[in-house]
Image (cartoon, rainbow over all chains, first blue to last red; front, side, top):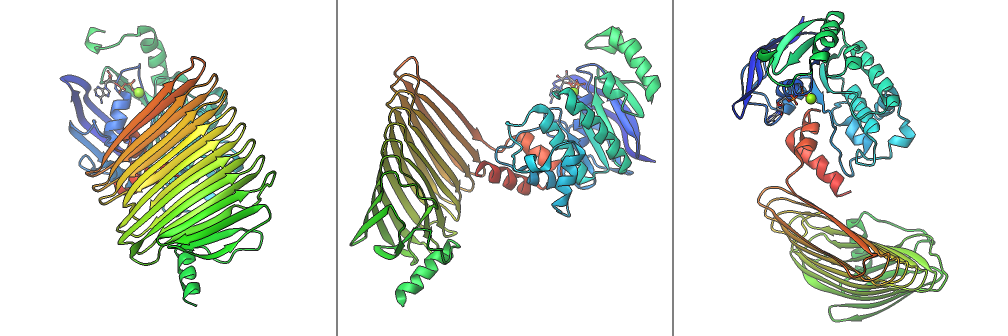
Length: 241
Length: 308
Ligand SMILES: Nc1ncnc2c1ncn2[C@@H]1O[C@H](COP(=O)(O)OP(=O)(O)O)[C@@H](O)[C@H]1O
Ligand SMILES: [Mg+2]
């Protein structure tokens, strides 16, 4: 079953085509990857599906569980079960970790906070007294972000470059929680240019210069990505490939 | 009888009730001292005049007052004036912390004029926290003027909070002179709404070698509120360090200005400032929206953090 279908999605900005007639189907319950070199349009695609500001003016359609969501606001989409983790999570002065983790949770049980923090390998006693501010390291911040997703239990989550700005220690926990999301029935879409992250997926899509180049089961995609994309290193137009 | 009733109302409005014998407290309604309880080493003298009270506070040399001293100032009626002239001395190596609740729960037209001089003697420390509780419609003009002298190796921190109720008109003016190796830390956290007019002036003059000054103003504004923050640090001495931090979140038709002044008169001193004024940060907002919060809920959460 498809949880998400992207139909003929084209997004232009300042007369540049950032996404060029994208058609994608996302099967529910799997870990997917949107891979491609820097500047390919991966984040743009995720941001467009989430409905972020600056990404709302496009042609084509986005179907979530069979219905178009393109006219819904970000929070309406989120309440249907779609969410996204930014490559660089925002810092909030004075916002307690507890409140942040429970932000997307309807039934605000506090034992869920401990459970979520432990899942990403952070000691609740230490972190529950802190704020999601700039005193957290990149890895800590990202793990708290993922703890909040764990608590929210969305149906579909985009993780934009989940390993970026993260120390090696944290990466291990991030890969663990991706498996945990899948176990809990959340469909995961990893947005990444990293081969290591791609390996965490079941299935993926390769994007280059705003175009969908290839899709398939992870081994096939991995081969293509490492074989053809990595050595190519081009920025820009696939028609000049 | 009447007195007890007012005292009760005053304490109720700040959510405070009976305090144990080891907690010092002073309650002043209008120009009348309704209650006072002191502890060892703390001296408070008061003298009423027409619209207010002159108060002398002294913490004796070497005394460390364990529990924060609770002050409650205010007026229960809708209209009136309260003038408080407060002279505070924290003697050498003494330390204390004061919590002052200023409450005007029914204010329609009230003036609260506070004139304080504070001297923190060598090696002494005072932490002062002032919380204002106003009615929903403002109706209060508050003019707190404070001059502080922080002597060698002493510490002074002050925090001004006005989050509940409309601010009304605030004219806050705090000045500190900071001597050798001493520290001053001033914070203001204010939520302005309706037609509130807020003017914050905080100044630290770093006179002594190794002195430190930090001025923080975090303000959220909505409706037609208007705020100006003038924070000034002047560093005269070697190794003096200062920082000014002004953050204002502005919504609706509200207006905000920040005028930081940083001046260094010795090349070995160092003063920094950061100011951010604007609507809610888009990334913060969108992060909370992707969790399913509505825009209003998200903004409320971000502002609560800023004012914490
Ligand atoms: N809001 C935007 N406005 C204009 N250009 C954008 C915007 N977002 C992304 N882009 C451009 O789109 C291209 C793809 O960016 P992005 O999706 O971030 O790439 P990726 O995530 O694959 O590295 C880049 O050239 C980038 O500059
Ligand atoms: Mg990207």
